[in-house]
Length: 100
Image (cartoon, rainbow, N blue to C red; front, side, top):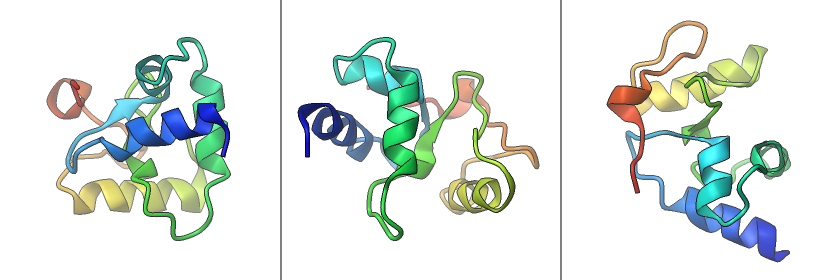
């Protein structure tokens, strides 16, 4: 695994249950400001059944960026952790944002 992925995954691994953070904030915390899309790409390549809490990462507006079944799957995981999430995948960042 390259250094970028290792640092990104290390930050994501720290997100506590019941909290969310944006792709851009993950990139910044990992030392790669401006690499939000790269974070999204890295998460999209995770193997099925990954233990990384990928579902706790949202876009900067606090919305799930996925569509269809994948949106439903991420929304279900967030709801299971007690995170209120609208039908379209919007989360209240003031209430649920992780502040490391």
